[in-house]
Length: 176
Ligand code: 5GP
Ligand code: MG
Image (cartoon, rainbow, N blue to C red; front, side, top):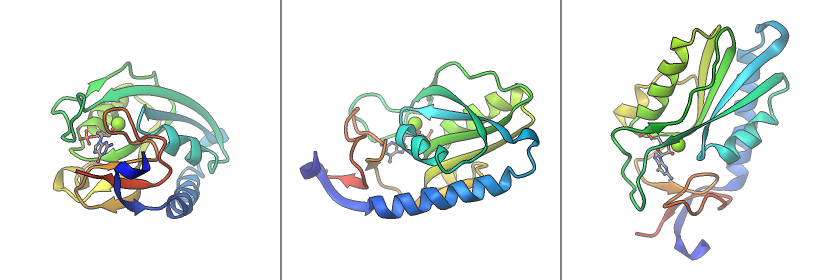
């Protein structure tokens, strides 16, 4: 696995520092939520490791709801025009924190967020670990962002290429 990684973009130490501070920011922004109860909607599979680390920095009562989204078909590094979404969890009257791995075209997060808003949650905010410096990604409503990165295909810390490299502990760029 390691020999396929061309270069490390964000090392595990920097990721863990940033995840901790994201947790603190999110906690502050949810201070006024009654009974401190939150529905955390995690978009699988890319946010698997991020959400597991992030939620341990959130001290409030959290219900975890997993949903699936697929943007790539097989060995591709271009995101699909139309992400395939699994069933959205019912978030009516809940305070929602939507968590995904990365904003690229922005279609996945936009579609999920709009779908959740239709269910009339009490509030909603989104958090992504990575955002590409693209107009499409920068224009998507998202309250919490871990890192802004250049437009390159990254793997590791949950992100895959053709299903692999999710277990790589740093975020890196694969060899061409
Ligand atoms: P979007 O809908 O914003 O184009 O894409 C979002 C989804 O595509 C992300 O949830 C992620 O699963 C996948 N994706 C986008 N960019 C990358 C990337 O650079 N690397 C990997 N591994 N997945 C990506
Ligand atoms: Mg994804």
